[in-house]
Every structure is written in C-alpha cells, then in structure tokens.
Length: 136
Image (cartoon, rainbow, N blue to C red):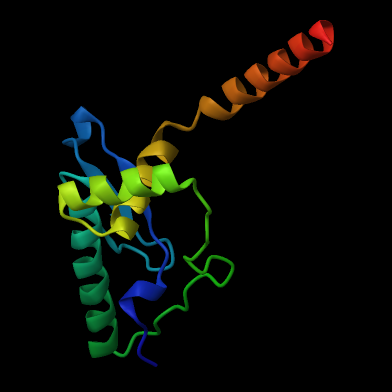
C-alpha cells in the first residue's frame, strides 16, 4: 500500500548551538526518518524529502510500511481574530511561505519553549483570579 508523504505526523524542535543550531524534524512512526534545516521551513522541506526517501527505500526492499499514528490526523481548525489572521497572512507572504507552513513553524517554535510556560500561565491565572475575588 502506497502511503502519502503528508499523512505522517512529525515533530520539529530547535537544535542547540552545540548540536549545530537550526531545527530538527523527525517522524515518530518511521524509525530513523529524520532531517534538519537552518529554519523550521527548511527543516520541513528537508523532512518531506527524507520521508519520501524513507518510503521509497522501504518499498524497494519490501519492508512493511507502518501506518501513521491514527489519533493524530495532522489536522485541526483554530478560529483566530481577523486582525491576527491578517497579520499571519502578511508575515507568510513576506517570508514567501504558505500560511499553513508559517503557522506550523510558529507552533513548533512555541512548543520548543513550552517547558516553563504552562506553570507560569497557571500561576498567573490563579493570581489574577485571587485579585479579582479580593477586588469584587
């Protein structure tokens, strides 16, 4: 069965300076299928090439090609304010990438920094609620 390159979920994260900088991309469903790039966009482009090559070699040798993880379809819909949508479109045009590629890049960059954010946001939300209760 021929699998489409775009069916497979991927993970992208920034590389440290010690690791050479840039961004790494890997496909959890396909052992050893990974690549990198100087920017998230380049990593995604290189990742698509790596994925296509991985699938071609697996087919050539008659290896079983794993199915993509079924719980992650790779698609979700997010409503945003019109002003934010316009800003994202403008930035994508400026960078010469699709809106989807830009948003994937921004989300991926955010996930690379998220290790401390949830606790901070939770603490700030709790503090704001406490102030509102005291003021009310």
